[in-house]
Amino acid sequence: MNTVLDISERNAVLKKMAALIAEHKDTIIEANKSDLNSYSGDDLAMRDRLKVDGSKIDTMIVSLEQLASQEDPVGVERFRFTHDNGMQVYNKTASFGTVLIIYESRPDVTVEAAGIAFKSGNKILLKGGKESLQSNLAIVKLWHQALKDNNISSDWIEYLNYNRNETQSFLEKPTQNVDLIIPRGGEKLIAFVKKHATCPVIVSGRGNNFVYVHKEADRALALDNIINGKTDKISACNAVDKVLIDKNLPNKEDFVKNLIITLKNFNVEILGDASLSKYDEVAQISNPNIWEEEFLDYKIVIGEIENAPEAVSKINKFSGGHSAAIITRNQKEAESFMASVDCAAVYHNASTRFTDGFQLGLGGELAISTDKLHQRGPIGLQHLVTNKWYIHGDGQIR
Image (cartoon, rainbow, N blue to C red; front, side):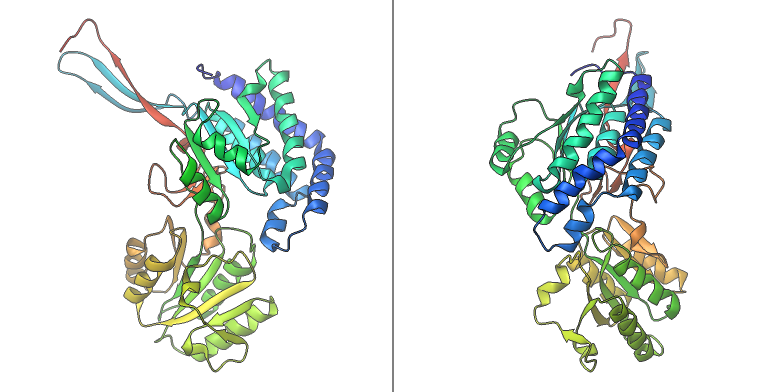
């Protein structure tokens, strides 16, 4: 598919898809119930991501309506230059071509990610997990209806109903052109895609996000921040898994006691280093590798840290490069921490739960990249493009 659809055509499909989802929401929810009934696992995060309810349907509709209202990301001039010989040189954004999205459990990705990829002029190949098959097929059927109603080929959005072996074969020897692959899921999925893919891959990696409670922290703010980050949505990659408490925090023991009590009220399993050994509610860390583990569960690790430089060092060693926060009243310390921590999103006195394309002003996201090329953090509509040089001359030769 070489020709990018006109922006009015792309927007018309997005608006139609929003209307179709509203019209057929009961069909999507029924298909999702079938997936939920078939899911036999005990992974709380997986089940939470798999479930589609009225609220998720509403979010799907809003994301499509917002996408339809956004500026066209294709053909945006990034640079212009007039050569000494008179040539006019331009650099403009351009579609990748064909984007493959491989994801687990989340039927809303079938709407949001496909919408972002389509709006940015790309053909989309969707490879969802078997656990959400019925939900995904119901949604793709609506995508095809939206395309058909606008006299556009259904080839623009294609669902790959492949098993693991078929997916591996496709990655190694694609039966059609693929320009970019974006895997969304656990580390095993990402490793599998990176091992077998023959084209560029943007990694939406693990979270394992840290909060550092600096010695000049507002303790009430710190408590609220940690509880929100840990318990608001355990299945989110922006959830908090690790807490580092400065050894010189005033009234540190009172803060730790309050934190433990509050976490226990949310049924969070707490593990701690030696500094928390006197608390019966805290299990001692038995394996230091737990510092680099992403939980996606009601589970948290708390430890004591000497100072801000040591906090930065520990975060850079063990985090997933996703999000980290410092809680402090000291602006200078906050700025130093934020500049030094090697994460896609860094926070001062705010929750890591805001690492989200919609929350950060992108109007939605395709994924949250923990890579540094070509986009870091939430990948929005304006990032799912490459660029192209346009040179206009009147006979110049070199």
